[in-house]
Image 1 (cartoon, rainbow, N blue to C red):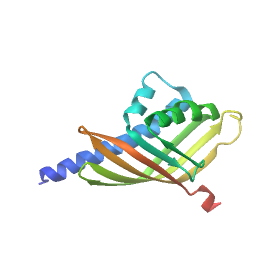
Image 2: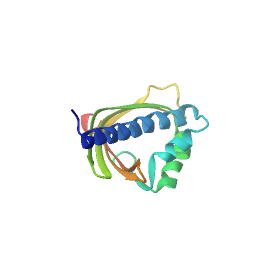
Image 3: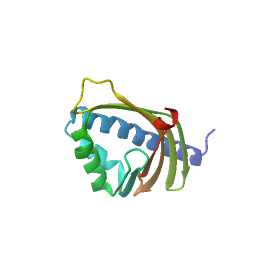
Amino acid sequence: MATILETSVEADIRAISRIKGLYCDTIDRIIRDKQPGDEDILRSLFTEDAVIDFTLLDGNVHSGRDAIMTLFCETMPSVTGWMWHTVGAEVIDVEGDTAKGRWTLYAMALRRTDMSSPPFITYGRYMDEFRRENGVWRQSRLFVLNETKAAA
């Protein structure tokens, strides 16, 4: 029989896994065909001081929820016309009100200027951090380890 602590950690892991799933699904939708509420969903996934580190992807670090919203709701849709990405090999470790998660990443995208070309592929790993604030888990750091060039 599971203890209350084990049940709580399992619920935390499910909540964090859902954040990652919503992140992937929502940014893909925002780029392909943004629907009412998509931006609100995306905003709710991140802490106010969240950081997205794309240094190994596009050379940039995006600090703060507002910068993250600009990245995904304005910058990326202006250059990316279609995107689909998924994650796997999930590993989540919870310690109190913080957690770390790792996922493998596979993404395909089309450039807005050339939607008829074959998609460009990116793969690698997400190495992320999460924090529980007022009982709600949110992502506080997202780091992409781009392994696409390593295999080329």
